[in-house]
Amino acid sequence: MKHSKRFNQSLESVDKAKLYETEEAIAIVKKNANAKFDETIEAHIRTGCDGRHAEQQIRGAVVLPNGTGKTVRVLVFAKGDKVAEAEAAGADHVGGDELIPKIQNEGWFEFDAVVATPDMMGVVGRLGRVLGPKGLMPNPKAGTVTMDVAKAINDIKAGKIEYRLDKTNIVHVPVGKASFTEEQLTENFATLMETIVKAKPSALKGQYIKSLTLTSTMGPGVRVNTVRYL
Image (cartoon, rainbow, N blue to C red; front, top):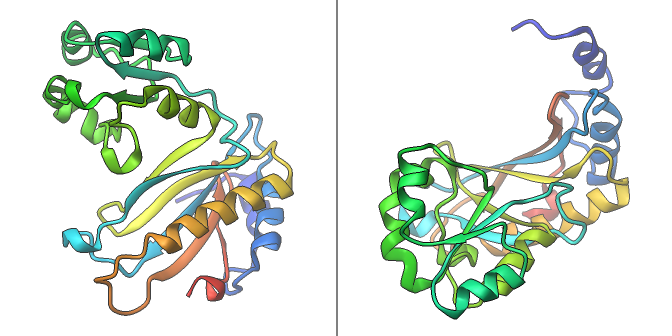
């Protein structure tokens, strides 16, 4: 795969054989995030879990203290007085059955997160095949199936992110933007890793965090020393 001159120059600043301490890794990734847009800084955590077994699945959510740097549009499935509660809390869209054909048939996706009250999951379930692959399906573990819709909306708007294992047992999550300070990125990363460590499945035998890489949208990956997380 051929890389740009800018990418190759960035690559020269990274020692592929070295495991960097968190602060140094963040400094390098931030310095190399020099595209013409505000790149997202991401963490890629390779685990020793086997996601094929339910007891080794990792899924949840965490609110990053400094947010994600992204404006998140929230869709809420609710009825009754929960509609007004959702609207008052700043939901971008609120509805019920009438949204099913709009999403299913018209391909309407003017939202980045979905919250639903438990009594609406029968309706939302009909969108499983559409929302599931996009990672938008509400889930109790992530706090997006709840009667406290105001808290769910506020958390998401404040910088709540969901994490889960992919098919290769890696967790991919944003930790902020290149425009963030190194201190903000470090604080977000520390909060994320504290949550991931606590989420270690009790059924897992062997090493939990196999490798950890930080990268920006257009930049090379920087490997992070995982000793403190073992």
